[in-house]
Length: 269
Length: 267
Image (cartoon, rainbow over all chains, first blue to last red):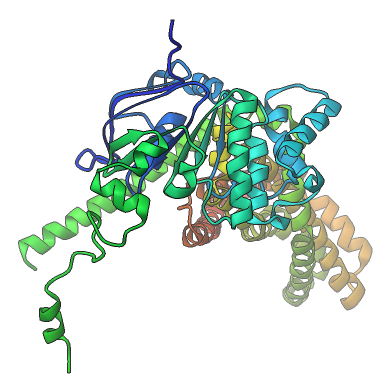
C-alpha cells in the first residue's frame, strides 16, 4: 500500500481579505524522504503556503494535511504535538540572542524533555558536529557570521530529529562558501535523518541543484511542477524568464506608468 | 460644513473608537491568556528569577539614587514649611508619610515604567521582529508562557520591592538633610515617625498601590511588546506607548486608590 504523502495540500485557497486571495486552488503532495522546492518571485504566496503547512494559517477553502493531520482542525495542543515532529529554519536563523550557541540548540530539548544535563550536552554536541560548529558552542549569536548563524539554526531545527524540515529562504544573503555548506547540509541531514524537506525560495538556480521536485508558483497559483531538469526546460514563459533571470518578459522591466513622452513634456524646463 | 464632510468625520470618529475598543478587548484577552498560561513561570521559577534580576535588580541604581534625592528635597522643603509653625520635629512624619503613601509607589512606578517597562517592551518587540517568537511557536513552545509570563511576574514581584527601597532611601535622605545637615533632633525625627506611621493604613496601602502599579506597568509593557509592529519603527513606537500609557495609568490609578484608601484620615 502506498504511503500517504507527508504534506498534502488539496484545492487550497487563502486570502487575508476575502476580496484579495493570496493563494488560489493550490494542489500539491510531498512524498516522504524527498527534498521539495516551492519557488517563485517575491509576493507570489509561497511564504503564505509555508505558513499553512506550519499550521500558522488555516486555508480559507480546501484542506491542508500535514503528518496525517488536517491542520485547520487541530487545537493548540494538537498543533504543538504536530510541530514537535517538525523543524523550521527561518530566513535569518531567528536565534535567541540572549543565549549561547549551545543553549540555542539545547532549547527544544530542555523544553520538551526531562533529559539529564549530560545527555543534553552530548546531543547538542552531536548536532553541532553535524553542522561543523562544535567549536563554536560557547559563542553568542552576535559573534557569528550570517552563514554560521544559519547553520546553528539548522542544528537547532533538527534537535528533536524531525520528520519534516521546513526552510524559509535558506540561501538569502549567503557567501558562496556558506551557500555550498548549507546546500550540502540540507541534503545530508534530510537523508541521514530520514526526514522530508520543503524549501521555500526565490533563489531558483541555487535551489534547483539540491531539490528532487519543484512546485513553481506565480500570483498565488502553481503554474509549473516537475523535476529540476523539467523546470529548467519548461516552455512556460514566466518560468523561463525566472529560471534564466531575464530582465524582461511576462514580468515587465517597467513598472506600469503613463506615456513616457507625455511625462517628459509635463516636466518643468 | 457639507453633509459629506460631516459624515466622513463621524465615520472616522466611529472607526477610531471601534479600533480602540477592539484593542482594549484584545489586550484583555491577551492578559487573560497569559494569566491562564502562567504555569511555566511559576513551575520553572528560575525563569521568573531571571526577570526579577532584569527588571528589579538592574533598576536598583536609578531607584535608590532617585529615592535619596527625593527624600533630601522633602527634608529641605518640609523643614522650610514646618519651622514656620514651630513643628520642625514633625519632619520625620512628613517625610515618611509622603514617601510611603504617595511618592514611593508613584515615583518608583514612573521610574520603573521608564527603565524596566520600556526595556521589556523593546526586548519582546525585537524578539518578535527577529522571528524569535515565531521560532518558539514552531518548536511547539508557547511564547506567551515562556517569554511573556515570566517577564510579567518578574515585574509584578519587583515593583513593590523597588517602591519599598525607594521609600527607605527617601527616609534616609530626609534624615541626612533634616537631622545631619539642618540639625533637627534625631530622637524626635525617628520617634514621631514611628508613632505616626501606621503599618496597615500607611505601609500596607503603599504596598497595595505599588503592587497595582506593578501589574499595570508590566501588563502594558508585555502587551505592547507582543503587539508591536515587527519593524524598527514599530518597536520604537511600542516602547514610547509603554512609557506614556503606563505613566498615565499610574497617575490615574493613584488618584482612584488614594480616594478609596485615605477617605477622611480615620485610623
